[in-house]
Amino acid sequence: MGMDESKRDIRVEDTRLVTESDVTKISADAEWFRDCFKLASALILTEVQFDIEDDGLHMKQMEESHIARTDLFLPKVLFKELKKGKIISTLRFDVRDINAILSKVSKGDVVTFSISEGVSERERGRLVVELKGRRINTYRITLFEAEELNKRDPRVVFSVRVKTNIDGIVEAVDKAKALLGGKANRKDAWTGTFTLESNPMGIAMKFAGDDGMKSGSMQLTNAWDIMQFEGKTGQQVIVAQAYIEAIIKAIARVTNMVTIEMATFIPLHIIAELPFKGSLSFWLAPRVPDEEADKVRGRAPEKEVSAR
Image (cartoon, rainbow, N blue to C red; front, side, top):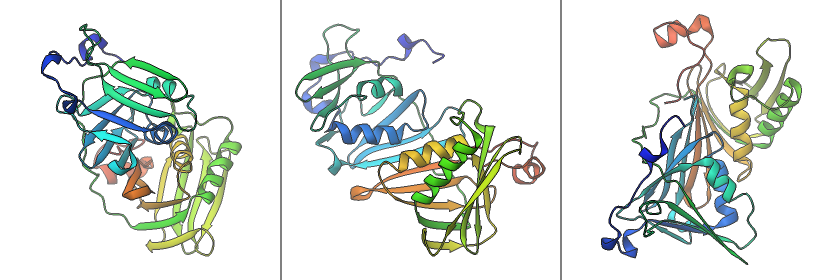
């Protein structure tokens, strides 16, 4: 990850003064938490950071290229136990470690996260993950030093707000993938584009390869797909096909309704409501055409703006 892990490991230096009430702990249904984690890490390829607060679990995380940001809130009532410790209340770890641990869980399994209080210096401060079902599996993984993250929402004014069934968007994403070929490429985000445009009928979704040789479109209509439409027609936002595909497929695992907030040349905001007032949202930077970049950014043309 470009940094010496030994310098970034967390250590609880003196465990003699640490009581059980001081230690952060997360306990939840393993299948449910696995699905939530897949949502939280849909765009994250390396590290993710959870903040434990009195009201629940929070995450605001930019993905590595700064094209997109994920915001997640899971209220405390959804967990079997969620305790904010005095020692470490922010957990930062490798996405790949947790995905590997949760790759095979069974109905009724419970997953618990806690901080190791091992006797050796190497063991202390590790993230301990316990999977308990018919058998008990215990894992200890690296817990990284928490980073100061920008938790403020982008200051933007949206021109369109749409609440819609997600099925039509999933279908459009699938058609874009089939037409443009293969798996959307996250390493070269702009190998394909996905455009949302407001019109009198609702929202038009257009997709095209970067070379312009292949393209397609689908119309979401007020009569069938859209539950609520507020705002202007003629607004358009262009985003990377790879990212919109990952976002929509992640949201579709937990809900069939989404809210889309958009405006021309403004980051796209996609919101999914979760049970008990939980929330999941994604900010996705738009592609600004080269000829418009100077006007929007007030500086040299760029391919995309940041979702920060």
